[in-house]
Image 1: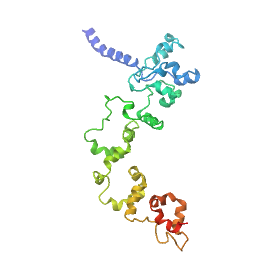
Image 2: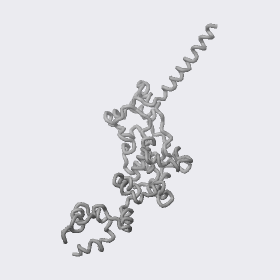
Image 3: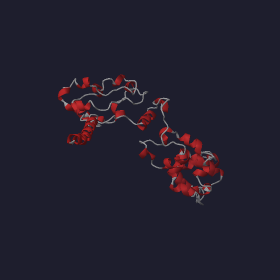
Image 4: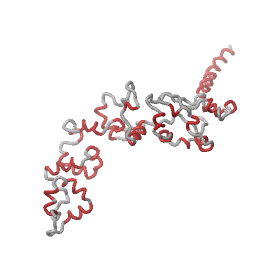
Length: 296
């Protein structure tokens, strides 16, 4: 009877010990040091990642195999090497990604994987995130559509784009969404025109601006100019309405054109400092407005 109870008590302990042992066999980090191999041993990336320059898909396993390590190490005598070989393999990256193509375009490993030469502890895959890929493609003027890297059968819509998203996405757009989305924001997937196609016109203008905004927006723009130019990039959006309605800037006071005949008044000083600002309104009517006095 005592033996029976002893077995019952010991069995869970053995199970826990076995579970911890199995878990330890797949470490999230290893003793592998990129820094040592690159700086001290002067190895290049493809000395260990041997097939990287010919790989044409992200599902290729490019992590070093034991035979490669054995070229320099006595595998059986170095436990750290064995531990490194237990790191998780990378076989689930984009099927359309080609290391070979990027290598032929003369990109370096650090361009995508960061400064791995300073890593002293082996970590899980140091793969670039989508934002860094898109930023680079934009800089290099490379194709930058979703299906450049994603296949048509992938689910690309984020989890928060649910049935109510069209009604509450404004809150996400206004908040610092990048802190909770892996450095991605609305512009990662959507062009500014995509937003403006919906946010222009009479369909949503009462949701964006209050009913009397046409008469009060001057007060808002004085403190939130950067917010305005998010949608209204071109100065002509403002100037065309101001000209049509004969809205005079606040500094166009008596003496603006001339304080005494021919002295140029205040506008001469302002034009010397920022002529571009003058032309934002007077570019299209310069002959009528300016040439009256500046005809010579």
